[in-house]
Image 1: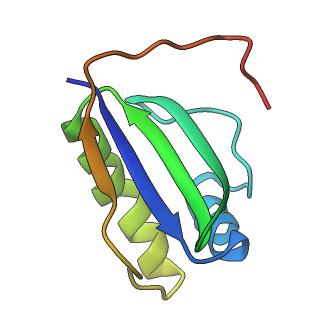
Image 2: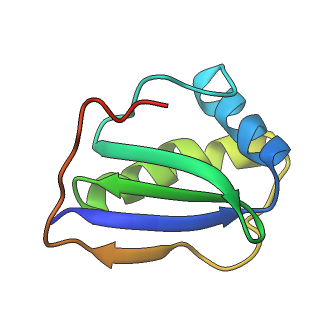
Length: 99
């Protein structure tokens, strides 16, 4: 079942630093395996990330194999509340929605 993952990251700098560690660029243009949609923008407490993943397992694999090692390598720890995970019953993807 597809899921939405909603997470707050304290700053743009932290978001870009983690991306740089994982993908070699601050703003990657390719989605990792299992990711359907990735969005990030200014939120009330930093950067709000809203992702859609094919499954909770796909997200957990990415979290364990990419996000956590990148944070450890950068000397960072998880901050704030854990991500909100929502089981989705309907997803529409519009290929024209590129920013």
